[in-house]
Image 1 (cartoon, protein in one colour):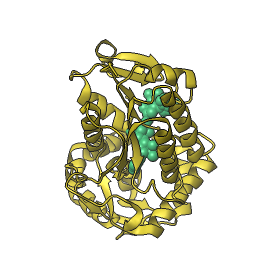
Image 2 (tube, helix red, strand yellow; image 1 turned 135 degrees about the vertical axis):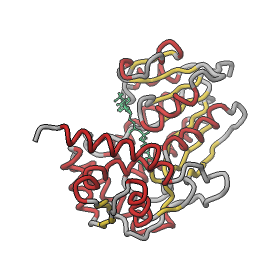
Image 3 (cartoon, helix red, strand yellow; image 1 turned 90 degrees about the vertical axis):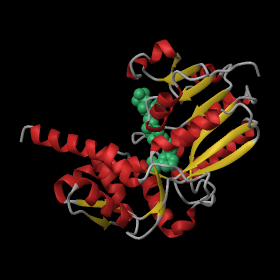
Image 4 (cartoon, protein in one colour; image 1 turned 180 degrees about the vertical axis):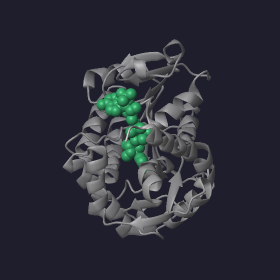
Length: 308
Ligand SMILES: NC(=O)c1ccc[n+]([C@@H]2O[C@H](COP(=O)([O-])OP(=O)(O)OC[C@H]3O[C@@H](n4cnc5c(N)ncnc54)[C@H](OP(=O)(O)O)[C@@H]3O)[C@@H](O)[C@H]2O)c1
């Protein structure tokens, strides 16, 4: 392979936007695959080649992966499809078909801890996409990330209104929680490394396994207000997803299966043990100070300014 080009899919997404920030101006030329170039950060189009298209469009994806050394592949979380599982299979299938035509292209895939398990809804679907990618390509790494700390943004309205964080997990269930900037950092290392070959899985676990009770304690300290965590049944989490985010019943059902499955499996849900290599830097307290607290203050200010 002679190309040095690195492809970033979802460059405006949570992991993808951090990845672009980390790779821009670096040693390798970049190609960004995006639905609407106007959504890219300032200057992106002069620093990277932009390919416009949808991840579900086989022709556009084939164009995106052509002549690429390493591709960062992320399947966006969506709420408006029939189901998340079907969406992951569809996009995974389209990307794998394109990869099969250029099987030497390296792929860095955003997967999840637990992807090797059945019965975890969209997480299991990511595991099925891992298998599609391995069939199609010779060099693939699955980044089996923990629970994104950014998921806690979903709690801002109930923190502001009631000082309560609601969720489906038991308050003492400890799971790895990771900031997306750290997921991007691991992705960037695989993308910049020209030497690896074959199929790999890499756990990305944040600095510690954390329970929702720990999250409530950290949020209380970081936001300066006394918060508590309240567990609700998985079906209530699914209902809230439909009401607050307009998720379809199928997406909500997938999410419910994931929450129920993780709760059933407990800390055993992941295959990769915590190691120094899987342990990443950003702590929950740092994430709250640098990222969540400013967003919370902005949210509260916006609510105050909104007409009653
Ligand atoms: N949340 C977690 O705790 C967690 C943990 C482990 C793994 N994961 C996995 O991480 C992945 C999501 O990563 P993320 O949160 O970084 O992604 P994300 O933020 O959900 O990605 C959203 C971006 O994808 C783009 N996009 C949406 N639909 C598209 C389409 N049809 N074609 C092309 N681009 C499209 C959007 O760009 P525009 O709107 O600008 O077009 C948007 O900026 C999922 O596969 C999820 O299962 C999540």
